[in-house]
Image 1 (cartoon, helix red, strand yellow):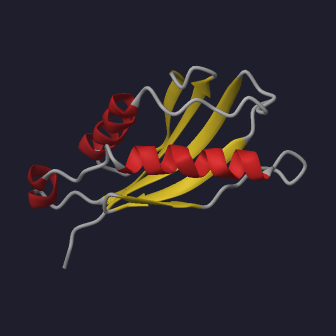
Image 2 (image 1 turned 135 degrees about the vertical axis):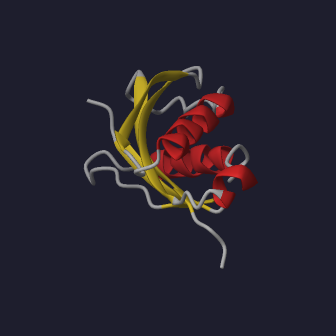
Length: 123
């Protein structure tokens, strides 16, 4: 069973908040999760057109990465309530591929991530 890692991506930034079960959590998995979240940050943007429509919220996306850093599965785990934001988050994750390859010490063939992509209007 793959482990889960989570990060908060907000206003183009990602913060590591790895949620890997303690029995499977290692410094290597935490370090790799941080590399993945930093990689996502480079592809995350909040288009002015959506901000102008008043769309904001958090999209929760689940995806798995292969040993080659390719997305194996990408699904919407929870909607933001705005279809355009949901599609944007999934598309930005697709555009981020390929991701950094996982460390050779990773036991799983595919590593699973649960990532909240937060888009907020600036006051």
